[in-house]
Length: 81
Length: 81
Length: 147
Length: 147
View 1 (cartoon, rainbow over the protein chains, first blue to last red):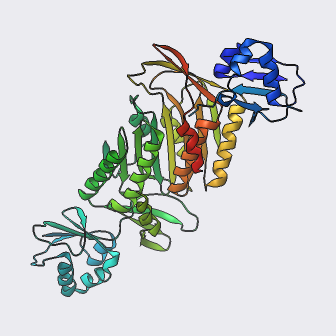
View 2 (cartoon, each protein chain N blue to C red; view 1 turned 45 degrees about the vertical axis):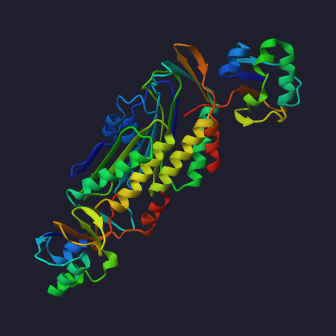
View 3 (cartoon, chains in turn brown, blue, red, purple; view 1 turned 30 degrees about the horizontal axis):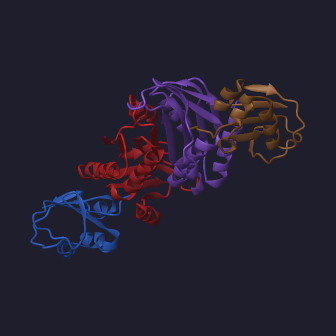
């Protein structure tokens, strides 16, 4: 599964994109798994209320299942316009 | 006093502007006076609810006094924009 | 603040660029442009717009000043043509600049609502069936009640 | 409908003219342009805008389609830049054409409100004090509740 990071999430984790092998059932499970791996993930995912998630380029939420998903992206609330 | 007419009021009365000598106290009095003069005025002023009046280039109303006024204009509701 | 009542066409793009040029204090620029519509059912040949020289400019300036007093605005532009206009011709435009988008949008809508019903312009439509003065619409008068 | 997410500057005037050209069915054209503000108190050197290639274009297309389903619209244009922008640079613009002005205004405001909070862009401001990601504003999130 491709995992993408944007804005300060990208800066904290240190890469814009990586391949992750996981059996996580939901986005929350994936976050827990990554946070346990290294401090930089724990730092990026410390406050989930400050984060948004997209599954296959559609906004989603942390309860969403990951079955069949090819691309997960984490980022802060958008500030376009 | 200069009296100006615009749009279909101008067309019914037949002139865009004329000098009028009057002792009318209010706009309504002036309208009554002009309407009594000739049919073309009576035709233009038949329905006051379809008319607007400006005194010295400020929107006003038919009850307004004419004392000191130099320019009176009659026209239908505006359709700008 | 620039107000122009003119017979000549204006260039929307050039006016928009000139309006926005050099303003780095206002993050939001809104323009509205009115175009003579070519509706198949009315078969409009052209339109004539009459105005009241002197009063029209004053009325627009007053509307623009009122907008500047109600919203936090930078510059304001109003251009309105008179005379003969063909379908597709641009009748008028307004532009507003503001620090925040809500102010720029609301002020532009306010200007439009007041220009429609309170600036001395009268439109006459010339179609295959003859010439007719455009009647004021109740909805345009009603639009003023929101402000 | 044209949607462009681009690094290059755009010419507001040329875009507005091209958008309005040849459309005689829609009497109302609204444009909104966002400009990088140069506020003395923040001393902004420049701004970096990051986006999500693929998702950003899709999200904007979805917002524009939603606008077209809610209002009676002609064409819709959305241009949004990414990369480095200096004070005074134009960040983005939207344009809407409609038979009636209310539709053109509301659709443009709707597009702006959704672009602010639902299109994947992130702004970073670089000032004399360092670099900082712009925080999303509650008022921008609240603005969505009106639609």
